[in-house]
Length: 451
Image (cartoon, rainbow, N blue to C red; front, side):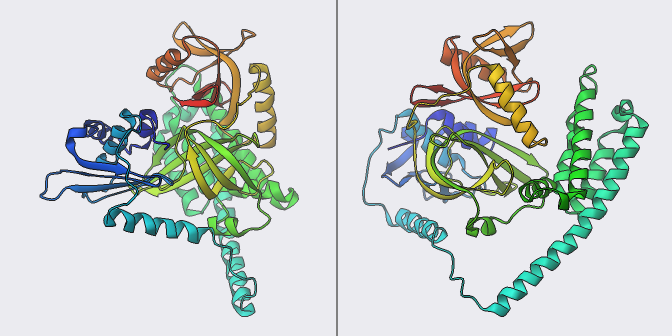
């Protein structure tokens, strides 16, 4: 049975306090009982009330349920049960027959999962209803187009005024200057532009002159995206889809799944990394995947409001046998999980990456040429050795070439990387940026070690 290890459980914690409380509960004496079978893990733990809390974990699709009053997902009891199993290396009591309170929950989840993969309804639908839906959709799109065009015209004027005033004046403007325009883009239903404008607020304007090329790059991306949208009709169809997606005009999930022309790939996908960020009340979860057979990378995005649960079968560090459907683009990367079969903790085959930073640069240049708005380009690079020069950490290849590790990367994880590799060259999955990299995990024979 493929239980998670402690590093993977760490990735599931909603916050630091839940993580600490979960580790404290990873004590066999605190649990009245705990069992599992192939599809579900469950246990009872005594809380502050008279009755014990009942905790359940779907092992196939990584979902949680607990009778405690916490609104966090997973709660500390779910984390504690996973940590307990991880520390026992999966050696826990096995029970084929589940208690009724467990089977009722897991059976309902199985029924919902099966319903999702049922074939689409018959094409023989009522023609009047179909026509009305098409007209309503066209009207909504036209109304939104007018809003986006008005917002873009205002953004273009704002950008030109900012450039005419000189980028050296940016540190004096303050975050409110950028947040006001970002809010205007949200009102115009151009959330992609809002995200780009907010990038100005993330720059450290008081750390030497390094902020100047960052600000110039953001301004150039905004200008390029404005011009691309204004000339949308002149672009190839798939490039049009990419531009609309960057503006924030996304295809609905249901529409994508039912689209017979959308690209789908059945593969064994390694979940090479996950990162969660929160802007205002929305949590954005990014999952980077690599297809062991297709050699394709994919990005699966999940969203949640505040502390709401994000249910996904993808577990960082595991390999998922699944079917992905890709959003239309001239360089397909973002995808949805259309059908998930199983997860396993080992790689089904050995993986081969890029030989050096020179080959990495060629791939990065090709990717940026196809999609100039791309931020993080996932790669697998062979024979990388960690090294330090003055106050900065680098990854060095066999030719002596180096790439700097991103300044925000935690030094504690760098020491963990050194411990795993013993300072020897090793293949690494990483996110490649223009001047730095973000390590994700280590490939060792038929295993993947998440950082």
